[in-house]
Every structure is written in C-alpha cells, then in structure tokens.
Amino acid sequence: MSAARFPPSRDRPRSLTILGATGSIGRNTLALVAERPELYCVDVLTAGRNAELLAQLAVRHRARCAVVADARAYRTLKDHLAGTGIEVAAGAEAIVEAARRPTDWVMAAIVGMAGLAPTLAALERGAIVAIANKEPLVSAGELMLAAARRGGAVLLPVDSEHNAIWQALGDTPRDAIERLILTASGGPFRTWSLEEMAQATPAQAVAHPNWQMGAKISVDSATMMNKGLEIIEAHRLFGVPEARIEVVLHPQSIVHGLVALSDGSLLAQLAAPDMRIPIAHTLGWPERLTTRAPRLDLATIGRLDFEPPSEHRFPALGLARRALRRGGAAPTILNAANEVAVGAFLAGRIGFLDIVRTVEQVVESLPNGPTHSLEEVLDRDREARAKAEMIIARLSSYNR
Ligand code: NAD
Ligand code: MG
Figure 1 (cartoon, rainbow, N blue to C red):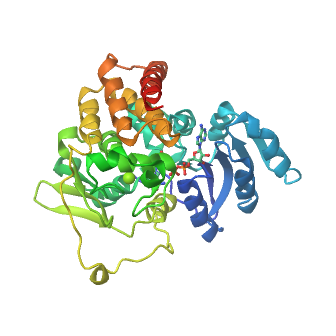
Figure 2 (cartoon, protein in one colour; figure 1 turned 30 degrees about the horizontal axis):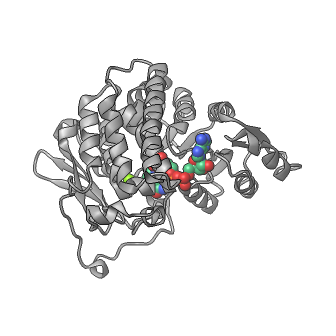
Figure 3 (cartoon, helix red, strand yellow; figure 1 turned 180 degrees about the horizontal axis):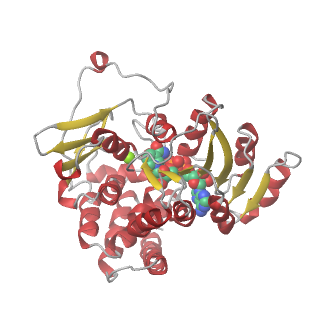
C-alpha cells in the first residue's frame, strides 16, 4: 500500500479481474465499473456456482473470460455464452489460471479460503489486489504478504474498517500510530440476551441492520466473529500488535475506522454504510472516483453513539484475540472451524450459539505450531475442518 507504483494511464483503461463477481462485493464493483466505461475494461469474471448470473454479467460487462468453480456448472455457462466469443472454463484450478492472466487490477471477493489460491496467484504476478476476502488474510496472512513482496504487488484493503484506517493513516509515520480502532455495528443481535440468541434462526442472523452482504459474513457479523477476524486482518495489513487494536460498538455504521496517534489526535473516516465507497477508493486508487453513494448529512444524523462491546455475549472477540496472540496455526484453525460451523448453522444443523462453541472446542483441542508453507497451512485448515465436522455431527445428532 506504499507509493503509487501504478499510475492509471489516461490513454489505456485499467484491465480488471473480478474474483467472486456474482457476490455482493463483486456486483457492487461491477456497478461502479459500468459507470466509467472509459476507465475500465473487464477481462476476467469468476463465480462459485451460479453460471447463469455469471454469464449475464460477462455479457453485460463485455468480459473476455468467465470461469465457474463448480465443474458441474460448465455446460450451463458454455451454453449461455455460446456465440459471444467469451472464453469459458470451470473448476478451482481454472480460477487460479484466470487469476494469472496479466490484468492491472484484481478484486479478491470470493468468500472463505476458496479465495486463497487465486489471490496468491494475482499477488505473485504483481497485480494491484483489492482485497475484500478476509479469510485467507486471517488464515495465511504471512504467506500472502510474502507473495505480494515477491511479486511486487500492491494490496489495497476493501473491508470498510481497514479501508477507513488506510484512508485515515495517509502518510502518517508508522511509529506515530498508538492504536487502531475498528468500529462494529454489533449486528442484528447487539441487544439480544444469550437466551434469545440461543433461539436465533439463520433468517434472523443474516438480516443485518446496516449492510447488505453475503450469508457467511452476515452470520459472522451476528456472532461478532467478523470483528474478531478483522482484528487479525488489521494486524496483518498494518503490522500493529493485537493489544493495540481496539473494537468499539457504533450502531450507526457511519464512522468506519480510526487511528489514534502519539500526539493525542484521533483520525477517522466517515461515510454512509455503502460498500461502493471503499470499493471505489481501491478501484480509483491512487486517484479518487466520483460515486453515486449517498452523502452524509451530519445535522440530519444528529448523533453518533459508541459503546464497549460485550465479550460475555460475544465470546468470538476474545477467541480471535487469543488466536492472534498465540500465532502459528491458531488463526488458520479458528478461521477453518468458523467456516464449517457457519455453514452448519446456515444449513439448520446447529444452533446459533453452537457456532462459536464449536470454534472454541476446535481451537482448544488441536495442537498449535508454526506454519512455514502453504502446504502446512492447508493441512492445518483441513484438520480443523474435520474436527469441526466431528463436533457438529455430535451436536446435530443431539438436536434431532
Ligand atoms: P457473497 O457470498 O455475496 O459472494 C461470494 C462470491 O464468492 C460469489 O461470487 C460466489 O460465487 C463466490 N464463491 C463462493 N464459493 C466459491 C468457491 N468455492 N470458489 C470460487 N468462488 C466461490 O459474499 P460477499 O458478501 O460478497 O463477501 C465476499 C468476501 O468479502 C468475504 O470474504 C467477506 O468477508 C468479504 N467482505 C464482504 C463485505 C460485504 O459488504 N459484502 C464487506 C467486507 C468484507
Ligand atoms: Mg468490515
């Protein structure tokens, strides 16, 4: 995120790869791109399963290549794009291949660890990588930063809190940073008791008060594991130790992130809760785009509230902090167990409070240790998923 090594050229549009194009972040990115066709050309679009939507987006945005992860969706994608001249491929390896195509800018917006391999490929070839996909940063952050250094890539944070901190930091000398502060809306259950949360349904958990997001991050916001993952993400991106990364509840989601400096200044970025704003910041970087996102009128908003989070009702925060302090494989294990547990909750197999309980049990039961290579990270990720599955199978047999 250092100096502007990639000046946007006025005579050549910036070529784009959008990993996870059919998702919430992917579609918001494409909406911004469509407003400035003279600045951008879409090369690659990828999706997990939804071949029909991927084909529609590929045609609408004149992509050159469309790739779907699920090999069973290949035929549908191929049929929908027949006669368009758009290249078509399928499978996880084909997504990595597509991420290697030499574009200027990549949006990493796949959900979960599935985004790791393609994002690494983009970093290794030295692209500008706007990263929304926080799970690989949490799980394999050091490997990703090393890949970025090797490839000469630039990593730009899209997550609203991290994007806000990056904006607030500007060119502040790093040794003047005292604390980073991540704001949290508190999600749909901010004021719920543990007894009420025990009964929460997937539909209630994904109904976020301020943001429209994919199902996984919405559930993470409801457990506040999202904020736990974001503490780790902030540590990876800005190199600030865990003890100096704070979380404050801010139900209005207007102030997104703050930086406390050694002279007593507190710098913040404020914006409407609309992901087009941080996405536009990375899409235009190092320049600024004009967006149609809502403008803030502070007099109408009237007040901004802040309060400390409850670590008792939201134990995911403490769990993530402990994983970051332990280091080694602990964040990998935490993230993998959480992905499995959230999937099981969304599938109706376990209760809401079982998500974080499962993660805690997996973290407590597996040995920690350093992870030196991608293979080691993937091994620990697999072990944690298997362990989480075992715990969930037991829980869901009780629930029946
Ligand atoms: P989403 O569920 O709406 O979209 C996910 C995308 O990933 C889709 O295009 C899907 O097809 C694709 N995908 C899913 N599984 C895949 C697989 N196995 N292989 C390849 N592609 C696969 O999610 P989202 O809300 O857009 O979030 C994407 C990422 O951005 C997540 O890591 C999330 O934490 C992060 N993020 C999202 C927001 C937000 O406002 N939505 C904000 C901050 C960070
Ligand atoms: Mg966030």
